[in-house]
Length: 64
Image 1 (cartoon, one colour):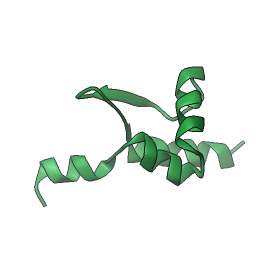
Image 2 (tube, helix red, strand yellow):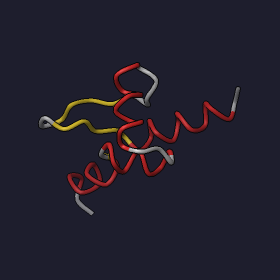
Image 3 (cartoon, one colour):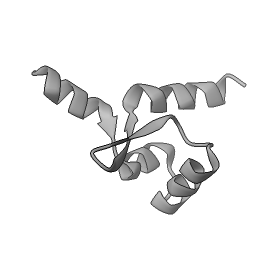
Image 4 (tube, one colour):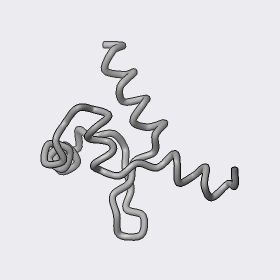
């Protein structure tokens, strides 16, 4: 596996992240707007999430 492919696999779109969190895309966009979504960044004009950040977000929810 190339390094570029490994990075692409570990980046998630808003839709993919919403599916992981069992939210709608609209709910995810609201979470981004209010600052309650997992850490994300604009990459090439698209909102992207690292898989590791989404997994950490889920783990944090269970550790409270």
